[in-house]
Length: 206
Image (cartoon, rainbow, N blue to C red):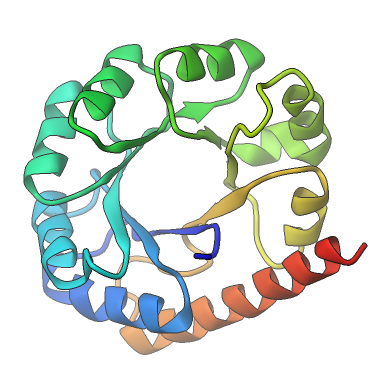
C-alpha cells in the first residue's frame, strides 16, 4: 500500500521536476503535487504525468478555481489539492474524475467538503488544529473519512498525529524547497520515509 505522504513541490521549475520526481518515487513517496503558485506549474505537472503517471499519483496544489481544475486535468494531473473549501472546485474536480482534497480547518468546512464530494480533507494549517483538535473533529466525521495534516508536521510529531487518527501528511519544505538539488531532495525524502515508517509501526503495535 502506498505511503500516505503527499510531497509538495512548491517553487519547483519544469526543467528540474522530473529529476525531483524520480528521487521521490525511488525513496518511496508516490503522491506528488505541484502548487499552482510555482513557476510554469502546468508544464511541470505535464512532465511529471508523462514520466510517472503509471507509478505515482500526480496533481496540483493551491487550486482555487474550476478553470484551473480543467487545466490540471488537461496536463495529465489526477489529484486536486486546495488550501480552502470551495464547492465549485470540488464539483469540477469530481466531474472530471479527479481526486479532491480541499483544505479545511473547522467542522463546518469538513462537512461542506464531504457533502460536495471530497475524497479526503486537508487540515491546513494543521498546527492550528493540533492532534487533539483533529481527534475531536474526527469524532463527528463519517467513519472512514480520510484526513491529512499539512503545515507543521514532520518526523518529530508523525506518531502523535497518527495516534490521533490522521490518515497521512502533506510535506513541503521538509522534502523540497525552491532551488534544492535532487540529491538533497532524495536525502530529505528518505529521512521522511524512515520516520513515517517507524511511526506507523509504533502506532500499529501500541
